[in-house]
Image (cartoon, rainbow, N blue to C red):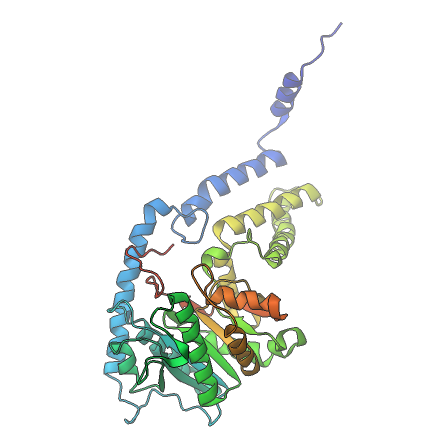
Length: 403
């Protein structure tokens, strides 16, 4: 009479039957090596990866970023000091048509001298406009200075080259501004002033509102040309209130409130799962096709893309303007916002009806208006500007950091 076999003994017997050549063992080893060894070694310095070793690298990388930013600020200052003014033979003012198609309005305040943020932004825009050539003849640079004091050296320097609107020049109470107004409401009022000035001065088809610490990417003008002339002719995009050109990289992961990203994430698994399965079955000399193996590789690829960082895979879309995606916008943030002229006028009306305060800045105000007014807004991915300012104009930051 045989004795009954215990569950532990049965499990041990099955484990002994597993060989190094079995599919389960191979996939287990692949998972351990990928997520426990290779990915952490390869990604521990990637700022927006889950494998990033913050305690090891953040302080050093932040200091290196600040030092590089100082050098680029000095280079931008020399760029303008060596450039003839608008009265010279090589004006920086981009000569748009009498009625520009696109006005690029750069909003600036005086902050953190030495970094010359606004000089970096304007010099980069000017360089890209020169490269763009005749295709950008309908583009106009416009500077909006909202600094209360008269000490904004960079704005004074740029006034030799770029048309400037000074909110506080010659008056102390423009647009109902009061010295006691909180900084968030002042920022909103400044935004309203600059947007309205852009419309009144040029009457363009589009206004691109750029904060003075948002450097344009190399592809910004070809991508905008494609989006506005081709993609935004579609009915569901045509009447959008605004198009965001930037969303913080730290908020671009799949595990986020935006449901559209979940669909994209599943799509990544459906695309890479069968491909990796075919590669594995071929190199492992396995016959046929295995649905469990395909499910494993779908989850494997989804996990790898999320942990390495969706932001880095979005960079592949820069290969062509047609690969950029346009998805529904979320509330943060406003370094670069594109407004069609009719939508800009609606935005002016909407913003005049809200009051901003701590915890409810202009970005949240704009986002809250979408549902309240039945509007739509979108964000382009990947970003078309880089946010370089580690010093906020709203809050004192004694220890600037990349995260």
